[in-house]
Length: 513
Image (cartoon, rainbow, N blue to C red):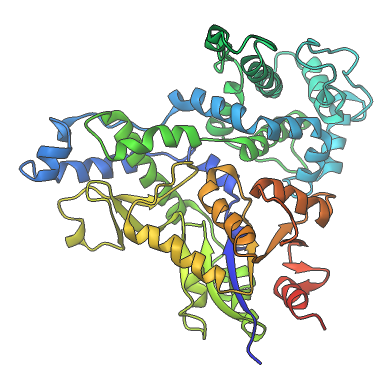
C-alpha cells in the first residue's frame, strides 16, 4: 500500500529551535542594525553603471552617480508608530490588559527569574510587589475607557512605586511614559477610528455632504509610541544578574517588556509598501528608491551575518527540518513551502533520500536577487551577471504588496499550490496567517474551501486556549466559512503533541489504528 502524501509549509516559528529569532524580533532587529555598510555597497553599485547604457540614460535620473543616498532612520519612527497603532492596536491593548501574566511568562526565560525580581523590589521599597496598586489613584478619561486593567496590574504598579521612590530617575520615567503612550495611543486610535467611521449616526442618503466630513480626526503620533520606539531601537540592553542592584534590574526589565510589546505589535507594512513601487521608478522619487534598495541589502546582511544560528542543530538536529527526513517512514513528502529567507531546509535535506523534494521560498531568499529594471529574478548571480545592472536582494519583508514580480515567481506559487492539491494533507508550522501575508493566506483558503483539503495547523502552546478555540481563531484569520477542514494541534518545545511527534499525530489522523 502506498504511503499517504504530505506537504509542509514553514513560517518563522519553525526556526526558533535552530536559534533564529521570531518574526517580531526579526522585524525589530533590522531597524537596529547599522546600514552604513549597505549604503556604501549600494553607492558602489550605482557608480559602476555605465553612463552611456540604457539603464543610465532611460531609467535612472540625471546625475544619479553623485546623488545623495537616503536610508530609513529616526524620521520614519512616526510612520512606524502610526502603522502599528492602526493595524496592531489590539495586540498592544491585549498585552497591556494582561500585563502581569505576560511579564511572568517573559521572566521564565529572562536574565533573572521572577523570585529574584520580587526580592529586588522588596529591597528597594521594603514592600512586596502587589502591596500597592494604582487603580483607585489613577483614572483615565471615561470618554476613552471606563476601566483600564493596566492600572490594576501588580507589575505596572511596581514601576510606578519605584518612580515615586526615585522621581529623578530619567530612564525609569521614560519607560513608564512609554507604557502610558502606548496605552493612550492604542485606545485613542480606536476612538479616532470610531469617530471617523461614525461621525454622523444618521443622515439622509441624498445629502453626500455628510460623507465629505468623514476622516477628519487624527492622532498625534509624535506624542504616542515615540518614546518606546526610541528605547527599544536606540538603547542597548543592560547586563543584569542576581547581584545587580534592584533599580538597574527594573530598568532592564522595563526595556525588555517594551521590546516584547514592539516585537508583537511593530508594523512596517505601510512603510515598505509606500516605498516599494519606487524600485521600478527611481526618477520619480530617488530618496524612496534608495531607501528601499538599501533596506533590502540591510535585511540580507542582517540574516546572513548577524543572526546567531545554532550550527550544531542545523547540521545534526533536532528540529522541524530534520523531522522531514524522519517522516518519510510514514509519508511521501511532496513539497515544502516557506516564508523564511534562508536555505536551511535545503541544507538539512542535502544528501538524504529526499534531497530532491522541491522547496518553494514564497517571500524570496538570501541567495536570490531582483533586477527591477528588467523585472527579473536571479539566483546566486555571478560577477558577469551582476555587471552593468542594479540588483537588490529579493526578499519581501513585511509587506502587503508582495508583487508576483516575474513569470518565475508566479510559477512558484502555482507549482506549490498544485503540490498542495496533490497531497492528502498539508501541515503548517510556525506560520501565523498574518494580514501582511494575505497572498499566501488566500492560497490556503482556496485549498480548504475549493479543493476540500485538510489543513493541519501546529500551534505552539503558550497560553490556555484549547484546540477548539484555536480552530475558531484560525478560521477567522483565514476567513473560512467553516473550520471543518482545519485541525489545530498544540505542539510543545520538543515538537510533540500529546507525547507523539507532530508528524505521527498527522499519521494517526489520516490512518486511524
